[in-house]
Image (cartoon, rainbow, N blue to C red; front, side, top):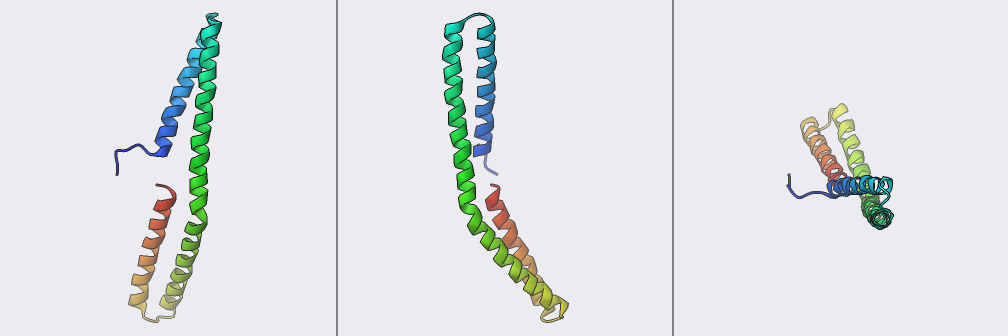
Length: 116
């Protein structure tokens, strides 16, 4: 597993920063420091827009891959069902058991691609 942060961890960190900025803005407002409050409020809003864009891009990337991944899962499931049917009919049982296990491995790899 990589030590590099993934997109979800980066979003989490940015949300922590936003929350801290919002807390500070609230404190400034309560202390009557309206100029600093207004400046920080604008920066917090800009940060929120950036976070929203990152989340939107992450969702777009994921949705863009979903059709292909779903097709691969359906194909693997059809092949898996055919192997199971052959196993039940006692046709090439050992060969089909190995094939079924391999197909489940294929589906696991597809699932890993969905949730990195």
